Image 1 (cartoon, each protein chain N blue to C red):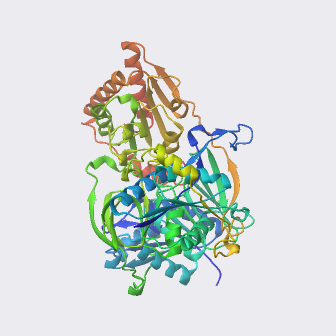
Image 2: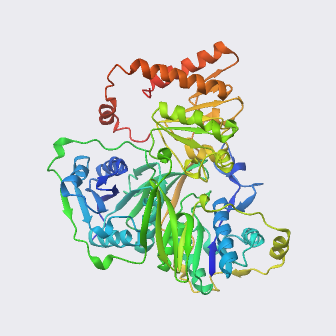
Image 3: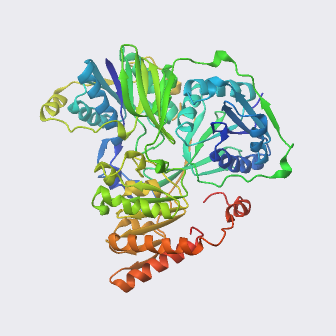
Amino acid sequence: MNIIIPIKQVPETSNVKMDEETGTMVRDGVESIVNPLDLYAIETGIQLKEEFGGKITVITMGPPSAEKALREAISMGCDDGILLSGREFAGSDTWATSYALSQVIREAGKFDLILAGERATDGDTGQVGPGIASFLGLPLATYTSKIVELTKDSITVERLIEEGYETLRLPLPALLTVVKEISYPRLPTLRGKQRAKKLKLKQWSSEDIEIDRANLGLKGSPTRVVKITRPKVTRNGEFIKVVDEESLETAVERLVKFLQEKEIV
Amino acid sequence: MSYQGVWTIAEAKNGMIKTVSYELLSRGRKLAGKLGCELASVLITNNISEEAAEELILRGADKVYLVNAPELENFIVENYSNVLIDLINKYKPEIILAAATTSGRTLMPHVAIRVHAGLTADCTELDIEEDTGNLLQTRPAIGGNIMATIKTPEHRPQMATVRPRSTRPAPIDESRRGQGEVITIDFNPELLDGWVERLGFRKNEEEDVNIQDAEVVVAGGRGLKKAENFALIRELAEKLGGVVGASRDAVDRNWISYPHQVGLSGKTVTPKLYIAIGISGAIQHLAGMKTSDIIVAINEDPEAPIFKVADFGIIGDLFEVVPELNEALAKLNKASAGISRTPVKNTTLAEEVEEDEI
């Protein structure tokens, strides 16, 4: 069972600071982490490897510093890492990113399964997983919450949709995007960390793979960001502090009245 | 032939068109009005009659492209993608809007890749750029810390998924009866992929788990202290006709299952009323609920960030406040039980359709 896991390095969002003047994100001093939702894909891959054997290759596209994300995945138990890096990829939207990663996967060798996080916590689009499946012509299950059965030539999964869970059987090779419910990511082991530190990663640019340069980066991206604004978050709410029986009664009374004014009750 | 017209992708289940399809018509009508072009809905499904599909016309569509086939009963992305691409190649729409539902967010990227279109996810505002006629798509990013406006200057169609409940459904306008056309497209079996099989479906074990479609979400967090205390939240949700949500903390502690989770690694909800109880309001949680219409917070800590986004806040012990609130609502329900409730909703819908961004 050979598995490929595309991951993304993202800013640690809990520490995101905004520049009050410009409304842009302050990137200085913000730590970069593996996209938290990718950890569930990594964990799922490792569990499958433990049960069925095989090899896991993690791939990412990003600046040279993104190798840290690959090494973290390897320290959890993935085997190999490929970093696709180069100026020509800068400014890629989800179309161009899906294209570039697809070309890396074509080059990376034979595989049975691609596992991806449902979306990244920075861009929050969830479009690259399905995009890769579309480029590679692979059967796709999004929002996968459980792997029910794996055979030599098919995988049966449950996917979490609005109304419940549906069961799909996909022929292999296939691509799954996974949600949090599928697994609980393990922590890296000391041995894993040591291995990750020493392992030589593959560093590829557009020179190393067959790729149409017209489809890369900003030039190859159909979409353009034209404006960034900072939404007004703070609301001027009404607040009541409960300190005793009387204020408790008042608070609840006021809340009920508030809900009545808003035609909720 | 140049690209023209606005399309919305309608969704249906078990022969019923989903409300989110009508929300897209509100969006589409505004854009088609600005562009002076036609508005069409595409409905890929099974077992919907032309008469039933006409509701899309009554709610604003000029045309409905209806593809009805038993093979299309369930959403299998490969099949739906082939059908939609076939229609795009034939009719060349300029703009395609779908709902940012699990199927919309799967279908649209699959299609956008193959038709080489620009696609923007989870938009909360849509407009037309004055000079160019380009679609301006605005969406929250980086945990809702920024709003990015995106356009697709050269590629067509321009595609976007739209956050459910971010606009009101277009109302029925009886005068539109017979004003539009339902065009039934024969399903071409060659478009059937046949790779992926749907083996079954089970509903969520709890009934109240569809937090994204709910008008009222009552959510609990770490402040509840243990799983059993979610009973308080459930009781309140029930009294308000809502569903139960949860913070990541509560889910990670196994107090409640993952489908209830609101936030960055869970779901984004936009209900009319969101009540956060014992939730401090980490940025990841706020990202999933701060566009709710009305936000109420109950928390002991006056410094909790949740109060910054709240319209109404009670600073106090939830174990005192929530039971008192449940009791007050019970009395209220009892008092109003004798009075027949007037259905205010439908009338307000028609009035409010203009201001479509909430």
